[in-house]
Amino acid sequence: MVQEAMGELRGQGYKVTRSRRLVMEVLDKVDKPLSPYDIQRLLQQQGEALNHVTIYRTLDLLCRLNLAHRVLLSGGFIRCALSPQGGCHRFMVCRGCGSIREFIDDALCHEESGITRTLGFHTEHHYSESLGLCSDCYRKQLEEDSTYNRM
Amino acid sequence: MVQEAMGELRGQGYKVTRSRRLVMEVLDKVDKPLSPYDIQRLLQQQGEALNHVTIYRTLDLLCRLNLAHRVLLSGGFIRCALSPQGGCHRFMVCRGCGSIREFIDDALCHEESGITRTLGFHTEHHYSESLGLCSDCYRKQLEEDSTYNRM
DNA sequence: AACTAAATGCAACAATGTTGCATTTAGTTG
DNA sequence: CAACTAAATGCAACATTGTTGCATTTAGTT
Ligand SMILES: [Mn+2]
Ligand SMILES: [Mn+2]
Ligand SMILES: [Zn+2]
Ligand SMILES: [Zn+2]
Image 1: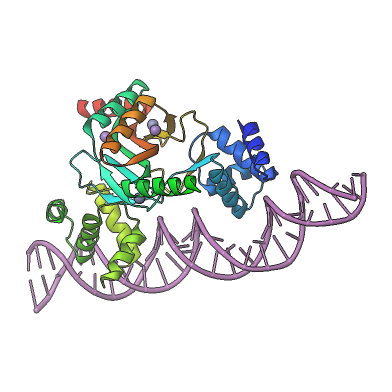
Image 2 (image 1 turned 180 degrees about the vertical axis):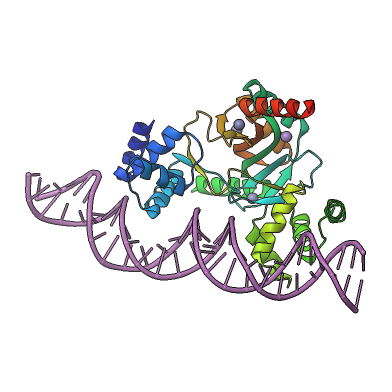
């Protein structure tokens, strides 16, 4: 997995460095979301010291190349549980204009709970983000694309 | 909405204060996830100064009373996109032991995309958390409950 | 109006994230 | 292989976000 990522880096003209390999190996091994400082601590434990700035910049690059994914709506965000469903929250987050809309769907909650139950997990409530484009931004994008194609 | 929340506070023996009312009103009006400092800035704009510590403590209380919800896995966490599905991530997060397991389900993604499409949104990928108890913690909980009931 | 437990604000600190610039290094060239 | 250079790293300094202890203020009661 890390090998292919290295190839992707090289192919896009980026250097394959010790820092980048180390960060990727940690992400690959741990296989769950890690903050930049989490990564620094894990590397420290295996005797590898990396400056936190380097880790931030490496992660930025990995995201640009689609080798990593950054969880949005981040930072311990908080919201009043005004919805009827017991604490379940689902959001549509537009990457164009940054707008956020909430929606709720009982059937979906039911299905998702069923899937996790077969994995031995007892779900109490859900939180989900749908990342994409709102209708306005989608339309704008279509226009831009067709303008571009006509040239 | 804020009225009922006030009643809940009073009913549980907590005081209804200016700070608490202001925080609730913002959450109620904005109706999307806000960080504590987001809330402070919004209140500042309407001429209401609140110390950030007070906001943190108010939000903690609202969460304990189930009047607000804190998004977990918070803080711009990052993870390598190793999964086959195009950038979709679904996690089971145990509130007992804090363990995290990832799962993926095509049918679920399909259904969720369909729902948002009917709302005019064009989804590119998903991120979801199922909050609850892993099988170990669920079993422990059951044992504790039965011990308690026998007394 | 007086009382008191609870809530707030303040200060000081810890943790996380960003930027500019000097130094080092991966990959290339001769 | 040695020299070269653009790219990457590390460092310092700073900005933002989150936590704790303690003195002061206040909501709800008597
Ligand atoms: Mn649900
Ligand atoms: Mn999906
Ligand atoms: Zn949009
Ligand atoms: Zn557990």
